[in-house]
Image (tube, rainbow, N blue to C red):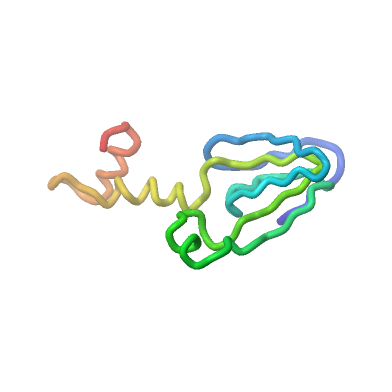
Length: 113
């Protein structure tokens, strides 16, 4: 995690849709660890184990949650790096019997499956 201080603009890169959430004092938000983009300095930040092995293995969210507690503002992204990778790899590996593996990437970009 990086801390930004001072005057001026800061540009951040994120994937998917960015959501801004205002958390009131004591309000908690649990998210996938890879979804956190930024937060204000007053947010309390903690990482927790998902809870049990079954949820960790079959829940599709990973082994840990990030728990954020207000007051403050958080920015979260809808698309983690692992989900983005899965979306790119799946069409790239599937071919319809012609072309190369890279032709799948072309189908991804033009919306064909």
